[in-house]
Image 1 (cartoon, rainbow, N blue to C red):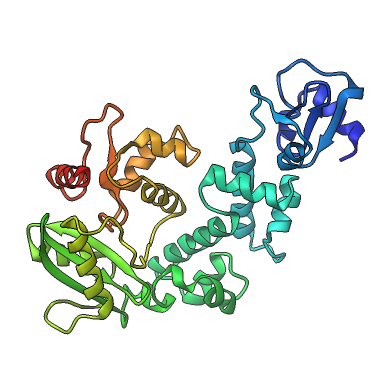
Image 2: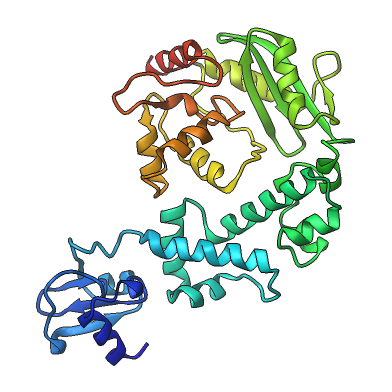
Length: 349
C-alpha cells in the first residue's frame, strides 16, 4: 500500500486496515494502528511500518489506547473464515502461510503471531484440525474413504496420508468401520481415585477415565470405536499402557507432577484449543472458565469452554479438574465432584 493511501486510512480511522500497517509519530515516539482513536498527528511527523516489531526496533513504543501489540481477533476470524471457505470449495491453489498473509495483508511473521495469539493454534494447525474434523464426520456418516478425504479438503489421498493421517489414530477405513481391525490396548487398575482405565492406540494415550465399575469404564471406551480390537487386562499389556498406568499412579500418589507420555487427542478445533489452554494451567493452581475463554481469545465463549472441558476423555493429563467457578467454588466434573476435590487437595500438598 502506498503511503498516500496509508495516510488517508489514518485520517479516516479505517478499522478494516487495523493490522495491515502501523503508523509511528516521531514527536511522541509512539506507534499506533490506523484506526486508533487518538488525535491525528501532523503528516510530517508520521512514518509507516508493515509490522509492529519493525516499529519497536526503530525505537517506538506501542500506543496505550489502540494497543498495537495485542492480537486483533477480527483479523484471525477473517482468516478462519477464509480457510473454511477454501476447504469447502476445494480450491486447487495451496493454502500456504504466504497465501494467507496476502489475503490478510500482513507479513507471514505477523500473521502467524496474530493468529496464534487469537485462536490458540497456528494457521496450519487450524487447517489440519478442521480437515480432520470434516474427515471424521464424513467417515462416521458412512461415506466412501476417498470421497470423505476429498470432502475434507485434501487434494489427494496421498496428501492426506502424508500430512494428516495421525489425526485419526488409525486408518480412515478403520475409523469409518468403528475402528474395525485396529488395536486399542487398555488396563483397569486401582487408584487413589477409585477404579481407573487407561487406553492407548499406537499414537498415544487416548483415554484416562475413573469410575466405580469396570464394566462401565470398558463400555465407555468401546462407545467411540465399537468394532475396534480392544484388549484389556485379560491379555498381555503393551509397554505404552504399562508405562501410562505407572505414570498415572505415581502422579496420583504425589511422586511426580508431570505426565510426559504422548497423547492421542481426538477433538474439534475448538476443543483442541481449550485443552491446550488447560494444559498450561500450572500444577497446584486453578483457573475459571472465563479465564480459559480469555486465554484462547474468546472471552464470550465461557459456556463453550465448559462444554469442551466436559468432553475431555483424558483425565489429569489434560487437567480439566483445575477449572473452577469464577468465585472459586468447585464446578462439575465428568468423573464426579468428589474426585475433583480430591485432585485439587492433592495438588495443594
